[in-house]
Image (tube, rainbow, N blue to C red):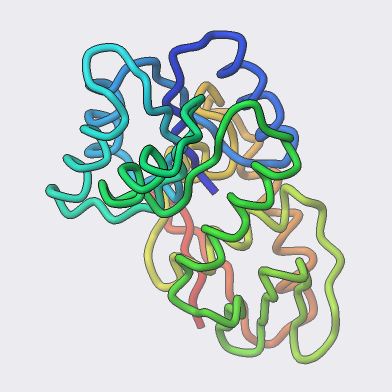
Length: 222
């Protein structure tokens, strides 16, 4: 899952980014509202964490402009303002949730998880292709009813493939959504992890689900 963090306080941004990366989220950080709008227009984020008080354009303006541009990614607002009217203003601008500073990191994680669950097209959190099934909420994967044990990175990679089933995903797309933005997509790390997945998902199966599209990337399909 890829998150855009919009925060101009360097220490706060570093703290949040580090914590989210430890939870296997891919996090891009910008420090003003104009950059936030630019990044949100060119990148497909799963969630935006948006501070209210920002240089150039404040968070309220950014959120309104996101919605006017039909960018409907979930937005979690962060701010030191905790008055009721400030919360109402944030939510009325198009934000999905509002968290006042200071906050416990565990609460931030819980709110992120809730927003991501709410935004999934499949409200049950179950992804399925052929006889391969993933329970996103319980972090479980099974094929033909047999549970498959995956590492957190393997799970994230398979989840991204299943969310984009039947569509070719490039190494760059994978690196941006499963690894960090500065990850070198031309190394063989992605290929190595794809082989790990194939050994767990396809090995011994009559029907192969993970396919390499030479010169382009990978696709998960029947």
